[in-house]
Image 1 (spheres, rainbow, N blue to C red):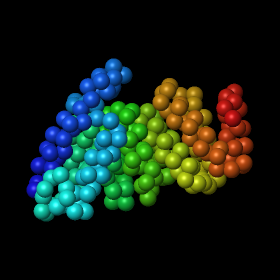
Image 2: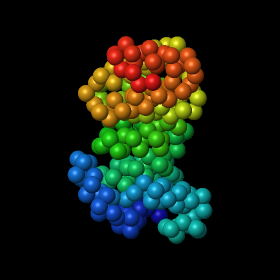
Image 3: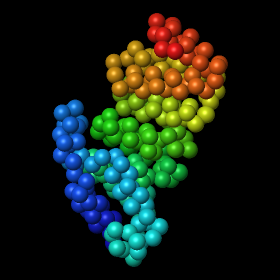
Image 4: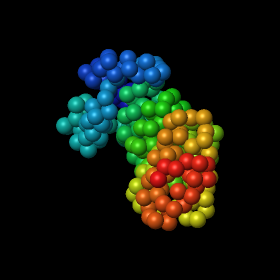
Length: 222
């Protein structure tokens, strides 16, 4: 079975997940995809699990294939290339984080079409990358909204998992967080604030650093 045949089958399956109200709500909020079935995230997560099973046991898969000439990495790449909301979200759920190269991450990052996809990338894929922290610090120093958004979301998750930055990382993070909190993007301001709260939860020293930093811009959030 060719990879485009599987992509076609996956796209056809979205018809069963169609939610016109969700799709219309997204359009009303300015999320204009070339094609958007309005599938909810839980249904897409279930679909991702079904697809992963295809590679573990093809006899039990919905595609009824006996052999595949490609792997889940290849399928993720193919799905990402589709200008369809559900395909891109599935790609973020399916891509093995230990296989994707930094260069491919850069390409995907440049092609993000919406805030929703940026957040799905951060939560489903980027936070699990072996080089997650490196990319996150690179992104929060960017002047692009989706770069900053992904960077702060990834750092939030790393802080939640107990990953502590070194002294240089602390100074760089706090500088960029303060800039973001005073920046032009509401989505980034919210993500930066959430990351600061996770940063403060790392321990009393981090809490004091976060309080001192935010007070320097007359913002008392703790």
